[in-house]
Amino acid sequence: MNRSFYERRTLEVARDLLGCVITVGECSGVIVETEAYRDCEPACHAYVGLTPRTATLFGQPGRAYVYLSYGLHTMLNAVTEPPGVGAAVLIRALEPVGGIELMRGRRGVQPLLNLCSGPGKLTQALGVTLGDNDTSLADGPVVFSDRLAAWRDPPIAVSQRIGITKAVELPWRFCVAGSRFLSAPE
DNA sequence: CATGGGATTGACT
DNA sequence: GTCAATCCCATGC
Image (tube, rainbow, N blue to C red; front, side, top):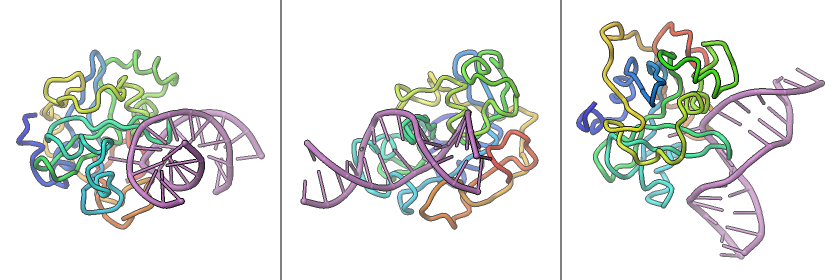
């Protein structure tokens, strides 16, 4: 997708990313779960303002914000809103499509349902690293592309975000309703 | 410069 | 259900 897709309200982008495809090398998957994060609420890294860590968040929309969580898990986000805002969409789960065997090898597990069913899992499966921070989602190496025909207008379930301690009440998690590849029930 | 807290996962009781 | 692993970085002295 081009930049204008991301330079919109974060909640809209989070919805519209469902059904889109992420490709990294030979591996790919359909996005089935996202969460929105914005500067105005304390669960977002941008809440503390512009720091070295959050520079990507405040930069150009349509780029990857990648960071390390709990010292070992890599998280992949798409930067949204105009530059200077500080917002992003966290990719939480994919339905695996291509490069399944490579992803199985990287993950060390076999079941398809367990390959990309979590934000740390999908980055491990795709081979996304901290080096991918602030790279273009149009040009790669992490490439986001439009919904396939089969994923037009997917049913969407809205719920509270997972694994955070602040602003827990905001209903900013979006799932493809009925997908078996989610990180947790809808 | 020292400290403490995660947008998680997997192993174990 | 509980819990440790592990490291970046924001914060405070």
